[in-house]
Image (cartoon, rainbow over all chains, first blue to last red; front, side, top):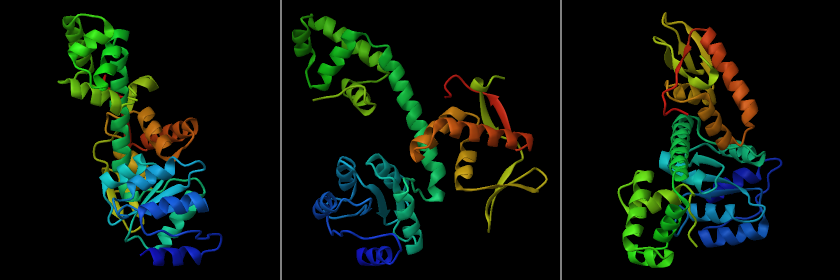
Length: 205
Length: 98
């Protein structure tokens, strides 16, 4: 498939294929060397899939716009691709004409999503932003001390070590932990940390 | 009802039909009254009586890196047109809605 894609793109006015790669490692190296405007990445790139390549490309200076090709249109794959930094997503059974249009669109700075998938994606984005907003609201109710306790939980400290770190009694540490769980509306310390990390409320070095 | 408190919702009896030229809205009498492109169709699906225009603007702008102000203006204008055509209504937002 890679050869067919490269041939189709090479035949187009204004498009030049500057590199090809058959696995994740060579894809990352080739992109760093050739600095393309658009990278077409298979979601199923060996050895471990294309999402890691997408994330790596997004982190490069002057990052290319990434178009992900998937074996089939699949919502989870679309969402994961966009979260990994891709700007476009196409099923591999899309015709080569659609592929060329997608590459040109990405080159213009546009996003490409299969029309059939757009409704589900927007619905998902709305829900995620609502959850993010709710999480931020709950974070805002935590006291400074409670945030400190949560940060220490995220570092893996238990109640005793949190108490020692903050020079408070274990009972007070326990109370803070319970308050954190109550305010974040979670049922465990692990869930509290997970919510905070998922919504970018905490950074763990 | 102030703009901040209202959310769009499909009018009862309005249906969505797929055709050779794409999706169309059909009114209660079966008349085809509005053609929807892919983005408009996706936004129509969000008019569920719970999702605010502001939430839609945020999602579309995030996806397409679009200007939020322009997007908001276009969306409100389109929804007002759909409302005047009897295809869309406005309901009060529930406390949890954006």
